[in-house]
Image 1 (spheres, each protein chain N blue to C red):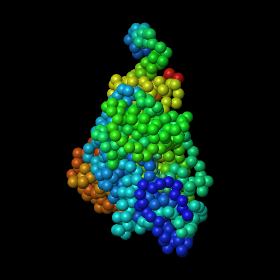
Image 2: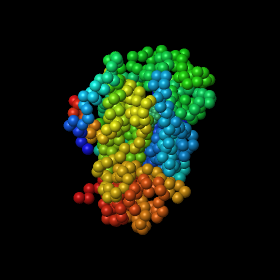
Image 3: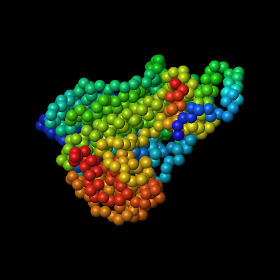
Image 4: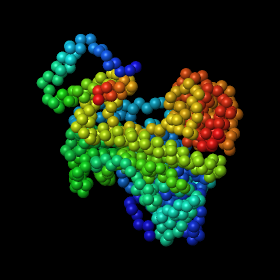
Length: 542
Length: 60
Ligand SMILES: Cc1cc2nc3c(=O)[nH]c(=O)nc-3n(C[C@H](O)[C@H](O)[C@H](O)COP(=O)(O)OP(=O)(O)OC[C@H]3O[C@@H](n4cnc5c(N)ncnc54)[C@H](O)[C@@H]3O)c2cc1C
């Protein structure tokens, strides 16, 4: 028996009995626990590279209820490479205008004016179940093209037993239990990660003593597609802050920050929720539009991470490894970056191109990413909930100055949108020999730019790429089992020049499979490129 | 640039008087709020993170 722990929004991977169950334990190169955004992205990335990936999930589809809605450009760029980005952007909502209120006053309004020349918007609002569905659709498509990906629903992992050359799993299904041996195990099993518990590992950090009431309401009213954020909202019982923004299907996400000492049951009573929502929705127009409550829940948030994301043959990715408060939308967004960081490394190790040493860099790089996300998310939380009299005074001073002068707006922090971290000075990245723009220095994820009728990232399809701007077309470089693709552009669009050349006339970039820049030079030097390939593979060539 | 800790204000007495005068008639809470706004305004004007860090240190 596998009793459900939550309701699902819809079925994506219904339970089916498989031969493994009668012929146990079968051995698999990669087993992923959890078909959330992170597990799905990882399996898809591996499968598209031809490396078999098996996901075990104890439900049959994404959970129902209010979870992630804000997906950032980097995530969309990754999803685009994986074949799911277009569906997400088409379904998602793009907004640019935000209004910030303090009590009853609007203190300022902003327009994000996203930078031009990118395939994907700065972010979209999209309900998490859709995000998961589009990834799963892409898995189905990839499978039809031969990608060896399998998702087993109603398969609950109940024990994890690591040994030197494999990990042994006990899996419960509606037809009883069976065992699986995995060469590598990736725990994408969420914030409550049973794998973490089964291995006796800790998950320490900071709990924010605050409760957030989250209401998703369905409203047909002609409300502007804007993000509204209140500090100290003036409505009855609204708490310390409130947020309103739009999702697809006429759904609006409303958050109320209620404080710590609350009676959860009472606060979730529909009359009480409706009273708050009425007050908010009527605050600007005086009239309450017609709406229905779709889903309400109360959350508390924490910022914490595991000390190490790798334990031998077991890796942790996504919420199982790190958890942040949702201000800045860094949960799923950073988890998808974990997945893409791990996928190409695991693939090259399983194919014998890279040594196991490469895998350690996953933990090193993504632990750093998690720290950056936790830092940003803690700062936002501290701004929104001043913890001392003095921080309250400064917070209010910022809000006051924001209504008087543009500089004040820069301090107002209701969450900074997730952007990928830059692996400055990390061991797998090479020299910056170009006098080029800072945003494309080694360690950075490639920003998009127009190329011909399409975009740069369309050409960075998950392999090592030499991007050559100007000059002559060099031959591909083959070293250490890798042959780079070469993308030579004699003509460089103004955006590409601004983002990749700066003052330089020409440039050569070596780019990793996850679209992070390894090194860059003013001119082509085959030996230098080969050395950096070794570096990027974690080879000890000394 | 480094933080200037030498006299730098023309007519220091005059400025000091103006500084006190903006607080005239304010409650403690209003004065605290004004001071905080003033720090933000000045800090933004300076801008340079090194100078600001030195200023935080110097004021400790
Ligand atoms: C209110 C709210 C708002 C949020 N907003 C945003 C946002 O705007 N943007 C953003 O990026 N993030 C946001 N997040 C965070 C985001 O939802 C998570 O970061 C994301 O779901 C993590 O994905 P995951 O794949 O790591 O884990 P999960 O989505 O938790 O998936 C884990 C999966 O593992 C399965 N599983 C667990 N145990 C077992 C087992 N023993 N055997 C088999 N399967 C198992 C679970 O059933 C589940 O399917 C928000 C979260 C909340 C709560």
